Length: 92
Figure (cartoon, rainbow, N blue to C red):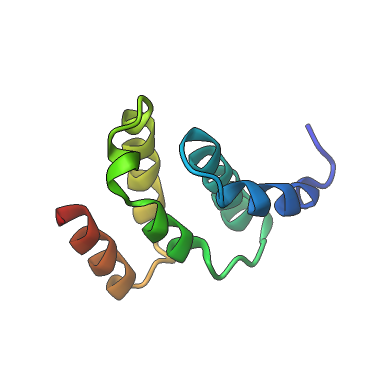
């Protein structure tokens, strides 16, 4: 247990820019910091949108990615237009 988990935000923010599993897990870490520790990260859903590429859907860890996307989209904090944009991207 960390006494100040917000200290991880800089590392996770840098790791989100990586493709594949590293980026997916970093985004999950940021989601936990946002929802449980009050971190303000306004670009969260923009980064998630950018991760929705063909290569992400072909990775070995796509099942984990789908589960995490389900968790991210089930948050009551997300506006409806963001959900609609992500669903549209999934459909492509």
